[in-house]
Length: 366
Image 1 (cartoon, rainbow, N blue to C red):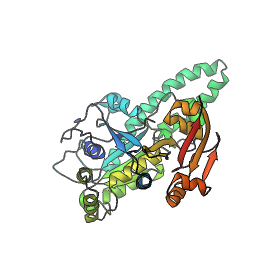
Image 2: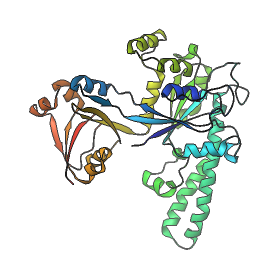
Image 3: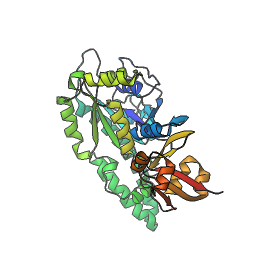
C-alpha cells in the first residue's frame, strides 16, 4: 500500500530538518523562505517491536518492515490560496497525501527568521488552516453550482448530495475543517470523494521546541495544545535538531544512552511514525518464514482476502483460506509447528477480519 504523510508548516519552522531526520533523504535546509520547492520524498520504516521478536525467533535470511512515505512540502505563507508564494504548488502537493504532519514553531531564536516576524504557534496554525479552508471552500462551491442544476431538474440523488455539500460549506464558512463535519463515511465518499479536500485529511501537530522544553513543553506548546483541543488531534513535542542527531546514530546502545541523557526512552520521530500509522487507521500483519519475515500494511477492519491481496492480487482472487497464529502464541511456542501442535493455529475463511499482529499464511488457487 502506498501511503504518504505530508510535512507542512510555515517557512523556517523546522520542516526540512525534521524530514532529514525521518529519512535518509537529506532535504536542503537553510535560513530563508521557500528553501524547499520541489517536495522531497523519503521512505521511512515503521518501528515495530513485534518484527524484532519474530526475527529473533525465526532468524530469517532477510527482514522487511512496513514503510510510510513522508513528503517535505514547500512552506506556505499567508495568501497561498490566492497563489501567494508557492501557494498553488503547495496546495496541490497536500492534495496528494493521505495525512498531514503540521510542524509548528514553538521556540525563540533570533538567528532563525520567522516569516511573520514573531513566534506565535496559534497564529501560525490559523494561517495554514485558513488557506486550506479557503481552497476547500472554493472546491465545494464549484460543485454546489454544478449539483444545484441537476437538483433543480428533479435528480433525487443530486438533491441529497446538495444537502451534504451545503453542510460542508456551512462548516468551512465558520472556519471549521471538513473532517469536523459529522457525516457518514459513505455519504462523505459520495459527496466529496472526488474533491480531495485538504481539510478532510487527518492531522498530527508537531511542536518543534528548544532542548530545554523537550520534556515539559513551554508556553508555546501550551497555547497550541489549547488551540487544537476541539479537533481531538494529537500533538507531539520534539526538537528537530536533536532528532537529526539521533537519526545519524547507527549503534543502538549509543542511541539509547543518548536518549537517556535527555530523559527520553523513545525518539520523537519514533512516536511520530507510530502516530502517523495510527491516524491513518492502519494495522500490521506478518508473514514469517526462514527466507523472509515481513510486515504488511492494511486498513483496520479488512478481511482476509483483501489482506492477502496486498501481497499479490492472485492471493485475493484465488483465496481459499488463511492460517493464522496470534503474536502472543507465537512468542510462547516459538515456531509454527509448535503452535499447530498446541492448537494455536486457526484456519480462517473469507469473512475473517485480520487482527493487528496476526501471523498469516494464505492458501490460494488461480
